[in-house]
Image 1 (cartoon, helix red, strand yellow):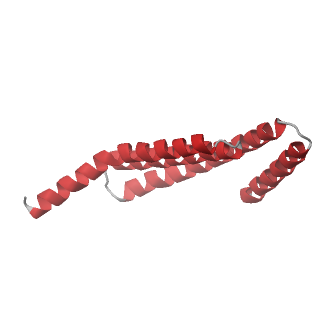
Image 2 (tube, one colour):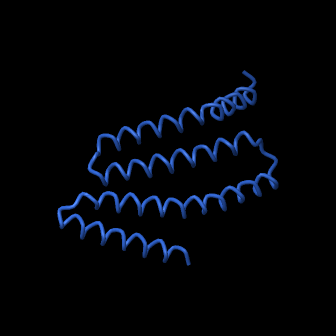
Image 3 (cartoon, rainbow, N blue to C red):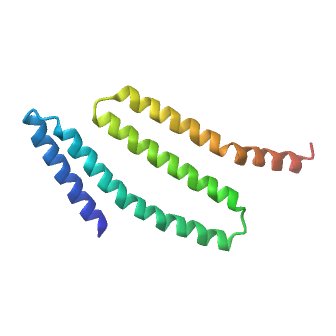
Length: 129
């Protein structure tokens, strides 16, 4: 089970980071960043499984690939924004983390606008206006 490996890596990283932090060393943040990048690598591998499942769903349901591409972009934006925001929070830079979260939310909104406009167009045509 990969989750056990990820949990072991995460706990080890935290223990090492705490040990270096109490020694007064600034290396603890580098240890945390390295651990996060390692876990991020494993997470990206899981995203490929999600993408293949989305493609399989697309083969069952005849839906425009534009919508699924938008969904994939939203997932990517959300994941990267959350990851980088959490790293900034761990480093003690909450203000930058907040700005990353705001930018991520606005990016998701911007990417999803064509889907919203298409939905409004369908509703307008349905109502005959």
